[in-house]
Image 1: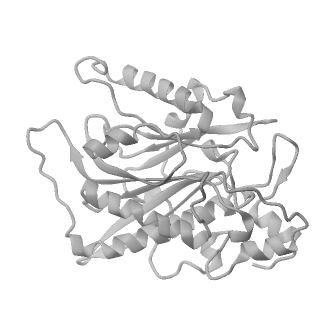
Image 2 (image 1 turned 90 degrees about the horizontal axis):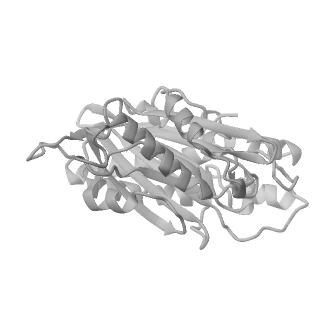
Length: 345
């Protein structure tokens, strides 16, 4: 099953991989831990192919619902610059990932913590405690380094890396990604997104114009669903020249993609979006010479963001496999659940 085959995203051209890495220079790597009750990991998004600390990018974040523990967002919004890889992991491992990535930065840059100060490393999280033994703190420095070493353009989606233990709409989910091509004044640009998806209740799930979650809920024998206690981390990247303020405006539109799949931004759901552009690299200059898109041309960017985020969430379900929770309960993938309930999609 692929989102391409569902015929629900046909209006806009996609990149060759239909992933965030269709934006030139971006690479993604995973470290997956899957051993009995331990099902978690780390995902690393490398924002460009050069030196991200010395050639910073313009970026911003938008807190859709702030039930989360992500690190580094305050400085990102204050200065409007991204100067590190973006890491994803489980809620109780953010400290280890920060510490390990800081060691990696110290080894890579001899003046860090001295002449150049401390880097602002972005570490994001979702709670995988239903499937994973999160209290065991199983993510270690080796997993952070492995995620960095594994970065590539064509990366896995689904139950991998930080997504290994995630659940969305009571179905197995994880990492999902997609991209869109945008034509502006005769030139093609790319916008891509990547999500760590861990939110929602099954009866609310919508794919395209079908309330497929309601169908699954009505056919299922299990009718008890608790509150939405999950989260989603949304990463949006583009090669369109945008300011930090414009990128925050783009990040806000990711909420449309969330709503389109059935999210109501529940009280206990941490819904956080980070957006950055690879078009301008900020160096140590007295004055920065940057280009930005004219404001009234942003509409197509907004639409591409909403579409890409929506498809990325669906891809996080499509590419995930059924899994057993730490308490022995089977968490079905979307595909397996549809088959078990006899629903043709």
